[in-house]
Image (cartoon, rainbow, N blue to C red):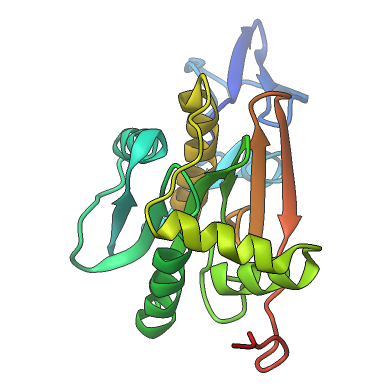
Length: 242
């Protein structure tokens, strides 16, 4: 089963339609004999192939079973909850297919615990938090072949010129410390929320989620969004020393 993709426009002409595609190209389509409807019929065999190639037609997505469990606090928690509702995604702690954990700053202990739980249960895990002046999302873990928070954590500590200080900062946050609040935290939080919910919607409808194994960082001060691929750490390669 297929449907017309979002963003498609059918501009009526005397002999048919001018089709503006999701890729922002144009197609000139002739109307079939007889009465011309508002748009070409979905089952027209002469148009199905070209419409599919041009993205005018898309398969109706099949929804995975399971719910989205949302954990967290702050403006990102509120923004994600609002977008999940708007996207029609059912939330709850039963039959969880995806867990989302978000906070106004990095929660190292919580994220590590949820990372381990995700590997045990198989439920996908997405994360979001602020650090410094940026809002970060991911990496979105969807299975053993993709990077998770534990992989990100190990690689950050290995690459940092101040690994002890970085670990101490995370421990301070876990013990109740909190960074200074910015003037407009909701601005960055809403961008991060949109990235998270777009990934979760794609995953639940068997589409490629751009945030899978990727950490995205949005800087409200510059408006720049950066994506960084995180590679899974081979087992035993990076081990924390006591």
